[in-house]
Length: 111
Length: 114
Image (cartoon, rainbow over all chains, first blue to last red; front, side, top):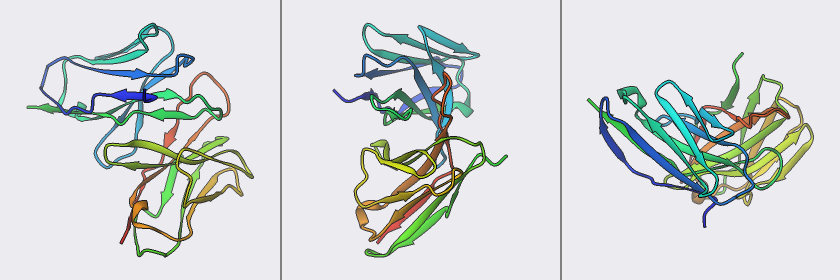
């Protein structure tokens, strides 16, 4: 099993739709999880951190299921500006605060 | 406060040529990282550093060398470039301690090796 696996998409949704992405991870010892956003040809930027069962920030909700080892990201009321690639990120089993990045899920919000 | 900067932004090399990518951060972060990103493969860690004067190998270190002579700078070297090293290279930094593992990324260097 890969350390982090994501559905690559693409997800094409109309404005205002609700969309959810899932991510599975293999390191059961991981305590914190992250969703990063990466715009086309730009650097990744932190979107949300998840330290317990979940986190909500406006239209974005991240949930964690430790028993099944998956993380989800829910985007409500999608905006055109939400179009990007969303990276699921999990701390690596090594030291030095290393992170393992999923290959990303591409989202396009259509007008 | 510029955050993390990288130079150059773009570069085209011929096979066998060498070059150095420079990463600089002004956030006083202890940890610094070099990644490469290829289509469909996500970010892969090349080398990292836990402090000035220390470096370690990541997932894909072959063909690269690094140095961290100053805390704020992390250099990535390609001694003899190969077409397989065509990629986008990102540098990142993070704090030594705290709850958050957030890494802050530079804007990337797009390298093409012909």
